[in-house]
Structures are given as C-alpha cells and as structure tokens.
Image 1 (cartoon, rainbow, N blue to C red):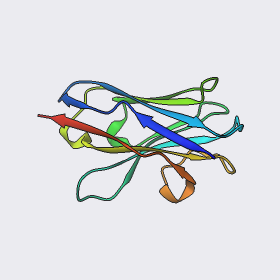
Image 2 (image 1 turned 90 degrees about the vertical axis):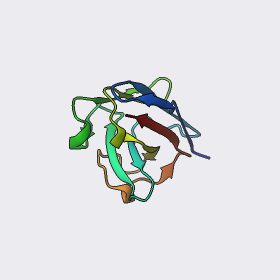
Image 3 (image 1 turned 135 degrees about the vertical axis):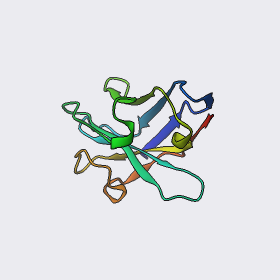
Image 4 (image 1 turned 120 degrees about the vertical axis):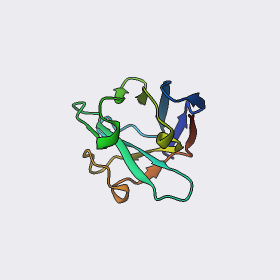
Amino acid sequence: DVQLQASGGGLVQAGGSLRLSCVVSGSTADDYAIGWFRQAPGKEREGVSSILSSDGTTYYKDSVKGRFTISSDNAKKTVYLQMNNLKPEDTAVYYCAAQFIYPVVTLMMGHYDYWGQGTLVTVSS
C-alpha cells in the first residue's frame, strides 16, 4: 500500500526556518507529483507547493514564493519543503499528497489520491 509520511514540523519564532520531509513508500513509480498543503485552525486547506519528480517542475503559492523551496530526492523518494523567514500566518498543519497516474504540478486538492498524516508548524510572533 502507498503511504506518505510527513515530518519536520515544530515551534519556531517568526523569521525562523524549518524543513519538512515527505517520504513516499509502497510504490515503484518513478514519475509522480507531490503537493504540500496546509490547514490553519478554522480555515480551509490550501495548496502551498508542488513538484513533478520526472523533471523537477515546481509551483508555489504566491505568498510563499521566495521563502519556501520544494525539492525532491528521487533515489530516496523523499520530497522536502524548506521554509525560511516563517511568519505567524504560516502556522498550520502541513500535509503532503501524491498523484501517480496523472502526475502534473497543481495545487488543486482533488488531483491527489494519497495523503500523509500531517505535521504541525507553529510560528510565534
């Protein structure tokens, strides 16, 4: 069975950094899309960033451009989200998601078939 394990969340001060990891297991596919999503208390889940494993194409939500960087280690089937200059509004549970059949870069939640358990990021002011 395909599983996604998200980790790396924690409590940081505004301006600090965290690196989230998403480990993909249970799939032999080498062409897939991974998306990072987040959900703050009382708010809807929103897309943050996405990457295509085959050629490294990436996409970012406007509010994180220049601060967040998504990358993929295909040999380890691990995707990272490096988050710098964190702001209190970045506080949320962060989820990673995967699409294997039609791997395209998108922040549309409905495109992804598999989801990790989420990891909590809290940014204090």
